[in-house]
Length: 242
Length: 115
Image (cartoon, rainbow over all chains, first blue to last red; front, top):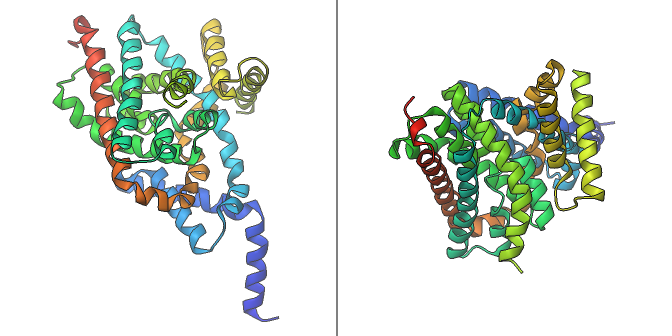
């Protein structure tokens, strides 16, 4: 048996099992985390974005169909539901530190959620995006695991939604300090809350790296925005898309 | 750690059941999340096992949506064709969302702002 032949056989064996998909996904994320750490946690070096680009390039390079990849990687994907349930813990911690600030937070949450949807959908529509794109924009400020659940419910692509959600998180983490400084926002809890509404998990980890109070409020905002959006977005979506 | 995972999976399963039989409009995990928050409020605390698992999940949350997001390879032509609209919408929307949320939370809590 030639060496060439046996390598092909090993490859056929590996690519048929979940091992390859699991390995490249975890390895790519690990590389992403390392780069992120070396870039001093610069939001541009987001580990998730790096992992997505690395895995997507790899499966294209080895000409593995996405469905084959997903068959293996679904074991990671499955944990999204459990991770969503775990968001109860940061919400509970945030609620415990609310100290009578609930009214401004609720109004801000509802307004921010609506502005996020309307502005994204309208700008995209204005510039000629089709309905599969604008539909996937609805849950883009929601934390990705919940956003993908919402996308499934309203019948838009969970993949596009995940891409838009990750991009929104990165953009929010980069732009939030400028916007908040321009508005002269001083209180950490208010800054954190605004970041959590707009930029969910990626914004929240940025908020935590700046100030613990900002982080707590950002994760509270992210969790509450997820719950409210899961209820409200299907209704809003059907209102505008009959 | 196992006990924490059991608690999470228990609430996830209850959530899925409620979603299937009572509240089909909400994803099961979101119902599980709400029930778990209520449970924690009733019990007035998080046990360490649960905190351990939940913090692990939130620390590596990003990893979990890589498999779905890699599906971007199926959408590349569509994304390229709409690149300007998508980028403008995402950038414009995130600025407006941060701005409006921040403005409202400050406006409604003025007495609290000086800390």
